[in-house]
Amino acid sequence: MTNAKQALLAAALLGLSSSAFAGAWVVGTASGAAGTTAGPIDVTFAGDGETVSTQVDIDFNPAVLNITGANLTAGADSTCTMFDADTIRIVVFDFNPLAAAATTRCTIQAPIVMGAPNGPTPLTANGQLCAISGGGAAATCTATSGSVTVQPAVGNVPPTLTYMRNFGTTVVFPNGAPLTVTNATIAVSGAGGSGSGLDATARVTNCAVSSSFSPPGITCQAGTTGTLDFTPGGADPGDINCSCVVPAVGTENAQLSCEEISPASGSPVVRIWDLTCSGGTCGTLAFNPPLGAVNFTGGAASITVSHTGGTAGTDTTFNSCIVSGANAANFAITNSPINFNFPGGQSNQGTISLSC
Image (cartoon, rainbow, N blue to C red; front, top):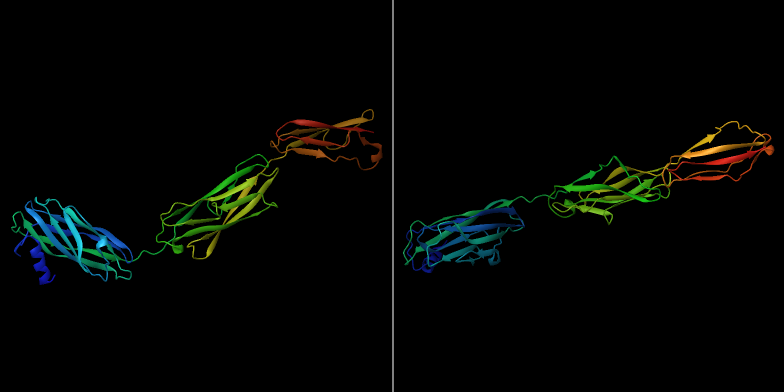
């Protein structure tokens, strides 16, 4: 602080002399990376029960901190302004003694210049002046400086993704009635990470299904758009959603592959799951007499076909019966053509009538 400034401060505070003063100024501290804003930084004053007015200057390095009037907020009974390009001036005045408890008289937000070197840069408190009621000087006015520490920039790190079920395992669709749709979900969640942009994004995309059925009854998609982007601190954007048209009979086996790109600016890693979607099962047929020779009585015979079990909605058919072999012309199926349709989940039977 120059002698000229000291003289100006003295004149501003009720014509005080430059003898000892009272009260205590304290400037706070903050930290942040270059290109960010450090703060809030509180500047407090604690009175002694007698001081009614006071002021202090805070000097800073404008090559490191780009503080302007827009970054200053005055507290109660205070003004907080830019005295010049590298000095903040705070003035407090009241008709009553200022509070003995440390009270915020100015709050500073300190933008850190891009490219500023790492380490502390001072907020130097100086030129403090205090006065008591009636214009007299108060004893031992002090000021404690603060600082802003420029920290290394945090690197861009994408979140870590977790899948439930994990890749490399089998996803089994819930049972459903044949030819209805059943659904399965692979939940995806992200944790951790830092920074922003593609280098801090984990992406799931390009999901594809290869199936034992043609056309496949199983389809899968990442989220609603086909791409899931996970960012540090952001909400999980969705899951991998799969659906299956339940086969009328049998099981559809498929394989799902999705690309995980982490970071999203990098190269993909393929994640693979096996998929299983089981359809209905046919019932069981039993024959009486059992397979083999059929004995005729009076030129007639019959074979009873009995059906049990199976899945509701999956019918079992029995048809296309013919007589073949030696002397086939001497035999006939009298209720031909045979076309039995046995509903799944029910027990029923049909009869094949024969003559010779």
